[in-house]
Image 1: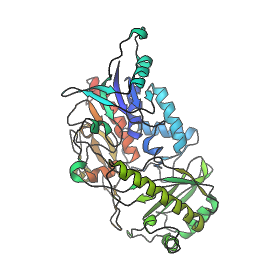
Image 2 (image 1 turned 180 degrees about the vertical axis):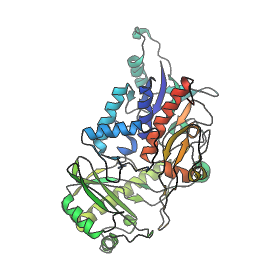
Image 3 (image 1 turned 45 degrees about the vertical axis):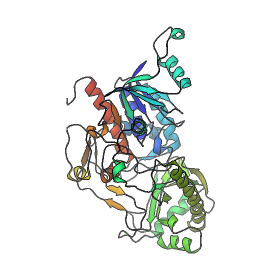
Image 4 (image 1 turned 135 degrees about the horizontal axis):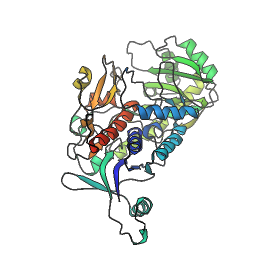
Length: 445
């Protein structure tokens, strides 16, 4: 049994790649370790998707279709700044299921790859555990006489796509990572949601407190209050309206100074009394591949969330009866393993807007580097649009092995601009279209 494309990882880039590939006629298998799709959007509660602020668009069909379907069931709104990426993470799981079904993508949940089968210069397929192998063989083979079928040891594929975010397939076969030499990190965070909030009272309070409409905004959209505000211990030329509130919370022992390092919140479509938080940020740098350190960070994050929730109830108007309703299952990781591809995309490529023959995305999102130290984070505006070449998604060692998502072949600073959700969607969609053109010998049409 053979698939045209096997995608490992059902997050942003993986879903876009699998869906687009199936729509183009490929036989696609999507393997996801969790019991739902969506990756950071659903497991890490990363929302809303950031706005790329581009005039041109490339490989945005999947993103637009996803948000349109979410909107039809109340799970998406377009913010007045034009950002279509405000979504409900629970409804996201349902819509992604339906999209994969409609496109004919074969999906396996709660599944991981046990081995990668290869020869000297080509990926041949993957191995799963015996029970799943038997199931998938009996389900997806066309052999009518299944009882007499001799099950092969692995599932064959023409193309293998690593969409695991941390390049787990590349790691399994011991390929080189760019981060092995750079040893650069960005802090992780552990997002959460609080419910039971009187959003009208909170909106009136925060809009009166903070006159800076670049930091704090509030609107009524589709009959629900939608708002956003932020605070950080970095000065950054901004007079943070929430500074005295956080200072008071620290002085009263409700939160620690470290808890105040980064704070951001957004409302959620179809959840009219809830707010999602892009915090707390875990300050201690650690290697994402170190499971002991990762576990410690999760515990630190949950301890900080408890303190923040008590602080919010005490100091934020409208939060008096609020409660923690959801804590992300996984850390929000900004950078981890990055592959060495056919082309290593650099910050110079990005800043100069270098043109490529086969781009997979166009963006204008800034270089966004978080730091554990005060006044050391970086948000650098990019003057012109930039593009990423497909060669940065292709393994240096195997022509039929690819990576999409934050683990692409890019240097540390360039990756800090490319890691956002819309760009990851575009990578997945763009790769599937590239493979279709390549396989039908019309590349460059």
